[in-house]
Structure formats: C-alpha cells, structure tokens
Image (cartoon, rainbow, N blue to C red; front, side, top):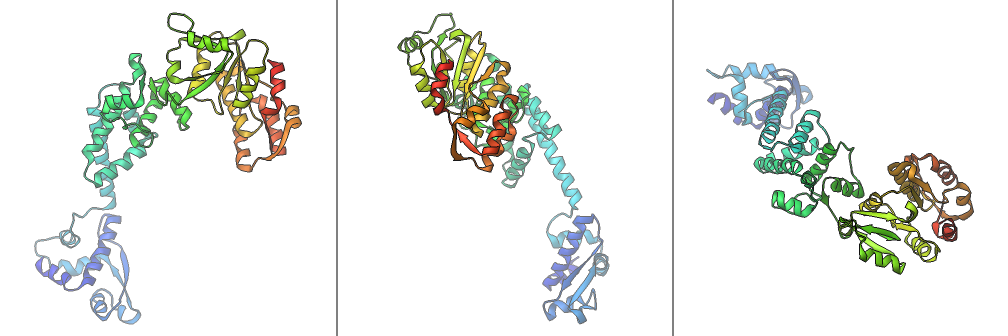
Length: 423
C-alpha cells in the first residue's frame, strides 16, 4: 500500500486518473468503463504512456479502469484496489446507487422519528399522508432536510416539524375557540412568528389545514384568511374589514346591538372588522335581501339616495374574509344582488360570489346591452383578458364575449341612477 501511495503522490496526474476511475465506480458500482485524458505537459505524457502509448502521437490517452486496477494491484500486498481508492479519494467508496439508497434510508428514518415523537391527532395523520403520498409540502420538507443536514442542525428541523404537527392537532376550533395567529403560534411554539406566511413552517401549516379540511391548495391571501378562520385562527382581524349599510345585528342573547342600530338610524355606513364581527351572533337584512357593490363611490352614492330601507355591502374590490363573514351571518337571506365593473376583475369577483352562494346571487345590470351602452375607451390588455377564461357562471358568458370582442372596460359610476331605481 505504501509503495502504491508513494507512486500516486509522486505525480498529480495519478490523482487525476484515480478521480476518473472513482467517477466511473460511482456510476456503475464497480471498476469498469474507460475515459480520455489530454496531456498538458511532458510530465503528463510520461505518466499517461503507462496506460496508453497513443498519447505520444495524438496527445491524449484512452484509459480503461480495469487497466488502472491491474497495474496498481501488483503493488498492493494484502490490500484491495478499493481500499487503495479510498485512501486516494479520502472517503469510503460508494456508488451513486448506494449513496441514494443510504440517503433514502436516512430520510425515511427522519420521517419515522418525527411521526413517532408527534402527538396523536390530525397533525400526525397529515404528516403520515405527506410522506406516503409525497403530497404538497413534501418537497419543502426534503429541501429543508438537505439544508439543515448540511449545517449539522437536523435536530432543530426535527423539533420544528414536530411543533407543526402538534399545532395542527390543537387548532383553536378543536376546543370551540378563536385565536390570533401570532398568539396561537406563541402558545404552541413560544415564537409568535413561527407561522408567518413567509416561513416554511407557515406554509406547512397551510398545507396541513388544507388536508384536515379536505380542501384544495390555497394560495390567495383572502383564501388563506378564510382557511384560517375555518379552524379558529384569526389574521388581520382589525385591518380586514367591510362596509355595511342598513344591516341589523344581534348578539348571543338575541338582543339588537345598539351601536350598529344607531348607524342605521343615522342612515350612515359602518365599517366592521373581523374583531367586530366576532361579537355578532347573526344579522338581518331588509326584506331578506342584500345589495353588494364592489365600488366604494357607487356604494356611497346609492346609500345616500335610495328612498326605501335596504341593506347594502361594499367590498372595495375582492370580497375578503370579513365580507364573507357578514354574508354568512345574515339569517333567512333569500337574494344577493351584486354589482361590479364590466372588466375582467369585476367579472371574476361576480363569478366567485356566484360559485359560493349559487342561486341566491342575482347580477345587477350585468347585461351585454348595458355594457355596450356605457363602454369606455380604456383598453384591456391581453393579460387581463386571459382572466376571463376562468369564469364558470353561464350568466356572465355574454358579457365575457362582448368584452373579449371590444377589449374595453365599462364602469359602475355611470349606472348609479339605474341602481337606485332598481333598489
């Protein structure tokens, strides 16, 4: 062995040759195959000609791995060529297949440890499903496994994943409670930012909740807020708000809430946050119907000019969680009238409401003839028009086709008088 190592250390070209033999071994799991090395100096040629005499003529040598083994094994007394390779390379010799198998076994053991150390519950069930089905979130765990392993901090990752599982098993809704997400995170992990959306643990929490509620992948912020709410987690309960007009609200005892009643008596709109809505048991709408406006200025004008009592909601664009909470709290609700802009975004909002509340939803003045009458000169680019392909409601097909054809938007502000007459 010493004689062989002395020869290899005498010229760097020998180490280059052994590295190539090692690469072949990794691929095939045995000493086989061949490779070509170019000579860059007289010294290189001197070494390479031991393996291929053609290097003297064309400056390169084609070397068989078995020939390298054959030439060196003569110098090895009581040692194998593999042992020599390990000495030269400086590590245990393993094929790619063996490396992958070892890594696979390590990952399986890692998952098994997490599952065994997690508390029984929905969180553990989700993590088992995650591993068995390579479900959404699995690649995140594997990526973090490699990252933490490289930094020698796998114990930290193991503890973090156990915390995710245990938190999923103790979501607030399991004990009929609601908690702010930061408070919930601090209570479960001692870190209020543990489940922030920009953390991998926050993303895994969402995947876990989707599994528990049997939901599809949730990505949009408003969808995530609603997902949280379904399991008793609150986010943005102050900033997430919706404006109402003419809606009556009642508490747990069935008593009308005076503060909201006063705004109705003043005929003034009122902004309700999620925090406010948690204090409301149910709501009542005038004539059991509600009018929803996307645009705040249109909502304001209509609420000031209508002559009869009516219940209005202003979403200021996409419906957020507070908007859905308000609608869901209205008892005996028969009709939901929606009015939005005649553009891809407005139609998409209309479509989402229709898909959620089905036959209760009626569209106000969403008609092809109305669109053509108030059509603006503002163009709609192709990227925005592509949104229209996601529409599912048959009632919106005519407007969709008209907008695709004209490629111009139309806005609610020109229909205020018509809305007032309709209400």
